[in-house]
Amino acid sequence: MPLPDPALVVLVGASGSGKSTWASRHYRAAEIVSSDQLRGVVGSGEHDLDASTDAFALLEQVVAARLGRRLTTVVDTLGTDAPRRRRWLAAARGAGLPGVAVVLDTPAGVCRSRNAARDRPVPARALERQLASVAATTDLLAGEGWDAVLVLTPDDLPTYLPTAGPRNTPSRRRSGTVATDGTSPPPGVLREGGGGLRGVVLHLSRFPAEVDLLEWLRDMAAAAEAAGLAGIALMDHLIQIPQVGRAWDPVPEPWVALGALAASTTRLRLGTLVTPVTFRAPGITAKAGATLSALTGGRAFVGVGAGWWEREHAAYGLGFPTPRERLDALEQGIETMKALWSPGTKPYAGQRVSLPETTSYPRPVGELPVIVGGGGDRTLRVAARLGDGCNVPSDEVGLAKVARYLALVAEAGRDPSTVHATVLDLPLVGRDRDDVWSRVERHRGRTAAASFAARHHAGTPDEHTRRLAGLAGRGVTTAFVAPVGLDGPDDVLALAPLATAFG
Ligand code: UTP
Ligand code: MG
Image 1 (cartoon, rainbow, N blue to C red):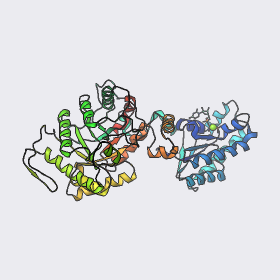
Image 2: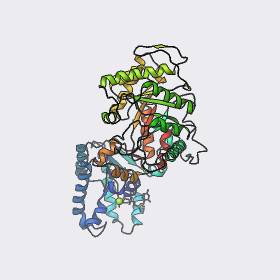
Image 3: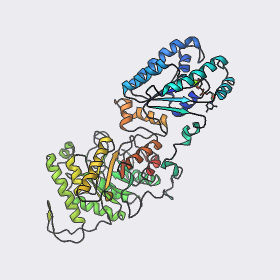
Image 4: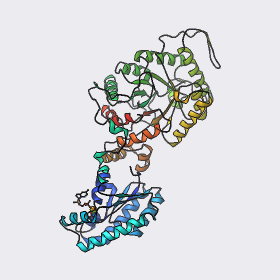
């Protein structure tokens, strides 16, 4: 049972029950506010009881300041002071954070013997009083309005060790099978001829300057294969977008770069996310997509969108019509591509497009899905009627759009199980809790740490795996994942557990 995060976590337990040990195994040192430690800060040491008043005053201040910033705060005291608990919980609620009480329900005998073994044991009578008030507190907690009360007995504790990992998560099944030599890719991610573009696809939007681009792309492809990812998608922009980097950061032309990737992998699905219809005549995108499909033996996909960034159009001498016209162009573009990819060379006379012939070779191999990016209602309707999938953000708003899209697909008389409900996910992935938060600090810029962490679901690979598995449960078939601060192959290999999220 993973605890909510961020959250207020209040520990309750007698001396020697294992509060500090449990806290340090699950949280970063900076997240734990301990009265003992603060005694050591304002007094002569952790056992300097004369410093208690000052230590608790400081503790209150630290707890209030952290909760005010919506940062996870673990309060490591005996936890038996009811007014203090009430105050902390109110402060958490005020900040919009859940409050959890964690009781270390360690048998009295164990506490006694651990206490006796310590350098400076608590006097026996004091320990008895603590044990009694912990027992009384445990009864009170249920009525105090905590979001969760977790009572841990020594039997529970092993499952909370970070190395034991969560129970019943798919990632456990495949731990340790990452092949860095590329000889034994994890099984089952790519069901040939079946689900097509399913699973976790690496989305590349940042490209390094001053490296060998071809070598870098090859290394990224090898890492994506080794990590068991389903494919690679390349962003299609003419100038690096401000959401990702600086205007002078390199952004390769994606269809050319996909050609290089095609030569670097025999497993990955490859395509754009997304190609604006304003960049190239749709017939040319159809030609590029069909060529990529031929080069990959049917592992291509084409992401398309209406285009949104005026600046790159102006800089490259491209027209940037009104939103309505761009959406018209999106409809026409998809219809044109599908006409050119369909069998034969006969003339095409559709609703919006007429072509005197549809002679287009090479033909795509098998399915060549068109993923329509964008969450506007008309875009979703275009995706449902004409495309083979949608692409929306992976947040709650996006998930509502996935549901809307699937309903529109059904409304259009199509089988929702045959389409690709895809999301763009921007996770911050760290090895462990310390690494996660040092990455948050490195990348957050001026955004508050808690907001940045929440936006990017900052967490460990296992946490992301659970989260993505939750998306699968809400109709999502494919997550295009663009990790925050993705630099090179090592960051891709770190995504291996995520590859299992879609089963
Ligand atoms: P803690 O120091 O974690 O207890 O463990 P505590 O609840 O925070 O105690 P106070 O209130 O600060 O005094 C006490 C001893 O028990 C051992 C620890 O290594 C430490 O020496 N311990 C703890 C275990 O051996 N196993 C455990 O699962 C937890
Ligand atoms: Mg302690």
